[in-house]
Image (cartoon, one colour):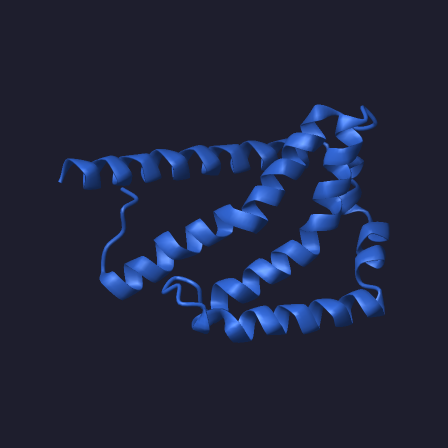
Length: 145
């Protein structure tokens, strides 16, 4: 029983921490939105080039179709689809921003926002979906207080 409580407590602290990090990143972004290239039309034009969209659709369809057959009971059509979409929309900006921050071409606050967006796309959105929706609906309980 002690081990169960510890893992629940850890997960609650973990979720609380990343939610606070995301909220702080949103505040940083909103305060200086025009300096973030993800806010510019050029980023979205770059992203929605025909070949990129077609490649994305092929890859995300494959990931989504095989999701329920992976043997992981928490990996389904929904999280496979939204994680594919989030990654397609945010990965180029996040990686480019982090690279430019390391090269000292962008401020650390933009790197922080990029890192939070990257983590949300690749991990935290999945945690949110699984914990809040899937476990709650399937098992009638949630470890988050």
